[in-house]
Length: 259
Image (cartoon, rainbow, N blue to C red; front, side, top):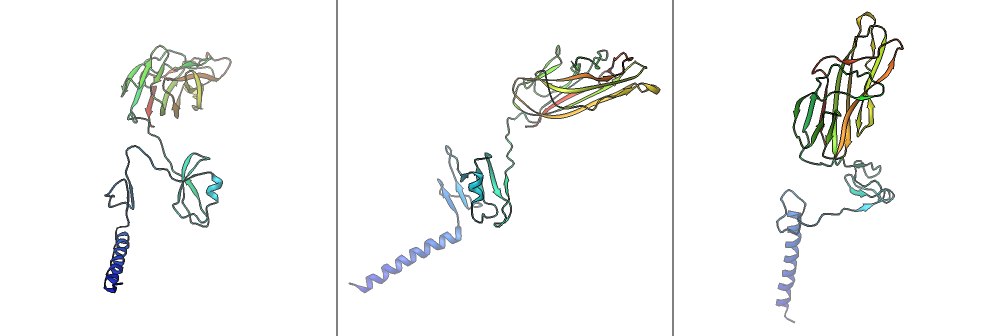
């Protein structure tokens, strides 16, 4: 065996190994499906037709992880959400990512109408749809928001989350006793969510006016019709029970897509 040939071969192996480990230590980057991982990443995965799956497990399996690192990420199949350990290894706290779906580019688009009607009795029994669709202040998207002036409803053509704000000032000519109209939002004719504060009117000493205010956020489905019902919550028996909107343009409904 030629010793002079063996030594160079061993040296060559050592040099190759040293080169590999040195390269790994210096660059510490991994590229999957890419030969040029981004300089800011420790791992860069590139694909146009596949996603990435992180470990999926139940809550019991998650809790069985020994000394989970701060920041450890899993997908919890019990709650269908990504979770990470926001605390230390000895007392882990598993928190869910607040991942909000974005439904469309229509976020922030809104509609606003104010009243022309000041003669309809809004202290009604049974309830009626408030006559709010008088003057269009604006409609950012006439496809998204479709008003029906006959029924005082606004149909929404895209599923999402919407903020609804309603204001109705009230007045009565009755000078005899107490009245208490209230309002509530309806979806396809069904009352939902909270009531407004009652527009209590006690006509003693000239107190003949009040107001109703309501702000809600609702999950709406494509094709849902939104309206605001007004109704009689309580009356004195000797009152005429008649309450109107105080003046033209003072009552309004505002709807905005927020998600």
